[in-house]
Amino acid sequence: MPKLIVSIGGIVIKEVQLTKNRTSVGRRPYNDVVIDNLAVSGEHAVIQMAGGQITIEDLGSTNGTYVNGKIVKNQVLENEDNIEIGKYKIRFLEGDTAADMTNPSELRSGAAIGLSLPMGIDAPPTPTTEQLVGPRVRLLSGMAVGRELPLTKIVTTIGKPGICVASITRKSHGYDLAQVEGQQVAKVNGVAVDAGPITLMNRDQMELGGIRLEFLER
Image (cartoon, rainbow, N blue to C red; front, side, top):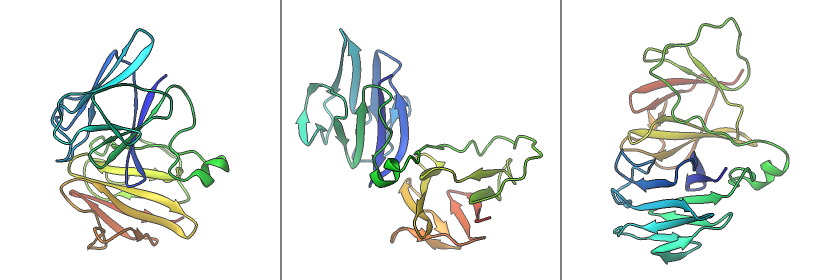
């Protein structure tokens, strides 16, 4: 099934399956693909499937729509085309080709990239007797206090879109927390990550738009 891999600064923030004949992209919340950034117009572009082709059409956006580095008004998409809208990059995949290539060397080793945005933080935790081990984050606030999310992917995105979204990326030296997008900046132990990624240590506490979490290494 055709899909879009949305990223910013080399960090994947969402994956969207193209299941409809018309998929809208823009800043307004009613779009099928919402990109909350001032460089993105309210109704920026539309992706349409018809006659065996998939096309992208710019809807008169302020900053334009680019495909493989060239500004377009209406363009037929081909597998692995790279779309640029504002500072965001959207990779078009025709089928179940490999996922994001943020870290090609890790993908070649067989590791998988997955997404966890949003976390479902407003839902109560599901009762379980399973004791999680290994790197993970634990919620310290909200209805789901105590809920844990294992960090089994290369990149895990957490937070609330438009408010504060951050990524936790597995590196050779450990796990780094980096800001992805949102009006508020994520913090680690009270220190904002706007100056760059912060390497997480066991029991570090994170704040993301009113959400408090704890990083656990084991």
